[in-house]
Image (cartoon, rainbow, N blue to C red; front, top):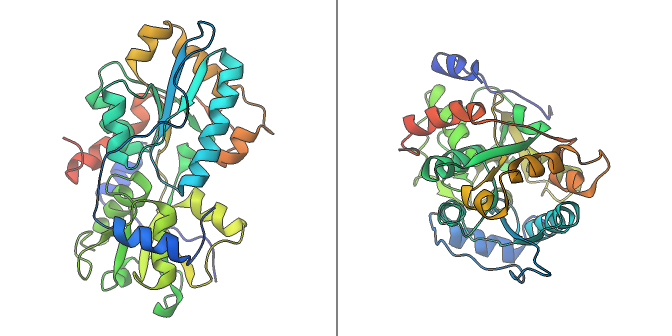
Length: 318
């Protein structure tokens, strides 16, 4: 079976695109994902002390909760420690429970620097004048979504998305770029109603949750980001019942977004210092390994014009 298939795109798609610890099948994960379908509850909790020591400034970082919480805690705890040592700041990771909370807490200034997906980054930037994208991974300039199916469907890898239409289907978060926005766009491009799946689509809440639901057969098909799929496949944690069906064309996705309140508090050079930190990480650094990237690179608002246009067309950006 082929492990890499690209979804066809035509018409408007070609015009726009031309512009630029998952535990498979575990009862705990499955119960949580079933409860999460279609549910949102913006809540934030602190991952540690927010006090500064010895007069050093404090930078509060966050991220959309797109993976298992234990994976996120390890990843962003490592980032906080590394960044704190490199920039002489007290860096605190504050986990949130859903994508909307990350956007809201960034807008209010409770989070200074957030790892957003393409869509949530656009939403947060439009709601927060002065917000600035400062870095993305090398892989985020050429990102893809992966459609997966339960092996019981008998579907073999293909470019054609229409066989997914009659299947019970789950996206990730409602505002996930790779788990909802771009997959919905490519489904629509091939004549599949992105909301027309039997019983309506589920919104699992995260990429790991999507894998759990498809593995269990609760949903027969779903979509997630390729970095999570590649990582889980490599470490052997994907249930054999879940198989790859198709991959989308490329698009820009994840990036770090810096809020204006942090610059006002910590200095006008903060954006440059942060960009220098990320782009200066050595190739063998643990942060890069945890992010599944070879490097971080600079980015700019224009890289997410495609995301904004599609978001507006699908009613996810106003």
